Length: 62
Image 1 (cartoon, rainbow, N blue to C red):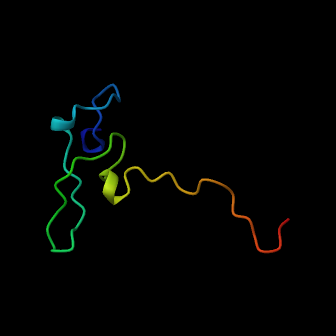
Image 2 (image 1 turned 180 degrees about the vertical axis):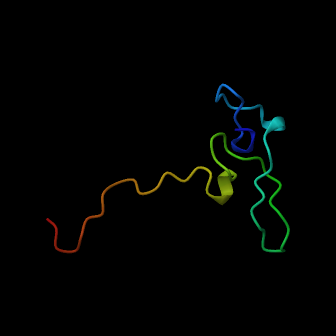
C-alpha cells in the first residue's frame, strides 16, 4: 500500500513519506512530486482525476 501513499490501515501517509509520482516529464526525467493518497500519480499527472462530472448528453437527446 506504500506505493499508493497509504499505511497498513489505509490511512494517508504524511507527504514527506509518500513515494514520488514517477511520470515521465517532457525532458525525459521522472516527476518528483508526491503521489495523491490512494493513487499512483501526483495531482498534475492524473491523481486527482475523477472522470466526467455528468452523463454524456447526446446531440439528439432532449
